[in-house]
Amino acid sequence: RMDPFTVQEPWRQFVQGAKQSAVKLHETIDAATDGPVKDRMQGVQEKLEHGMDETWQIACRGHEIDQAVRRLDPTALRSKLETLQGQDNSSEAISSVEAQLETVNRLKEQSTRTANRLRLTQHRLDELVARATEVSVGAGDTDAYEHDVDDLVVELEGLRLAVEETRAA
Image (cartoon, one colour):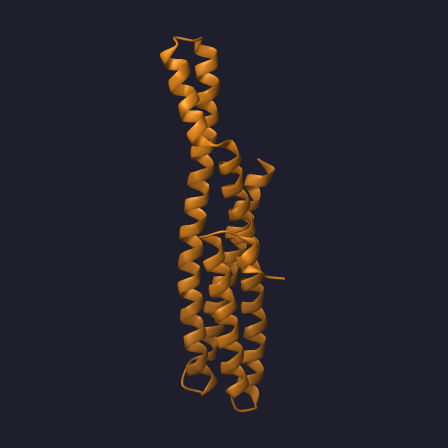
């Protein structure tokens, strides 16, 4: 169950955005005239809901990465490094703390890349929800719309797999 309040920002805004998009899409399809276009749009809605589930999983993983960074406490690590360098301690101790900071930086980069990609997919999702209105009244190309939905869902699946790989690494 997607609960945006179980993750911190920026992940919460992505989950909230996906939920709002789902509501708008549902309203759009409910308002459509019964018939083959509406039936097809309901199939598209299922695909987009799968994409929204992917968004949720990505947001949860991004939140986990951010929590890991907090636990590593980069501020304390930088302070420790400064202290070690000032005391002329062994290069092994300094190297160890530097390696920990490098880990923090890699995790931060992963989080930033993931958030940026998820932000872009949210804009695309909003666009697709807007286009659903056009398609539902017969003024848009249903095939092209469905193809664009498939592309977005595949992109979200790929992003989820990419962030899941950090768990295995």
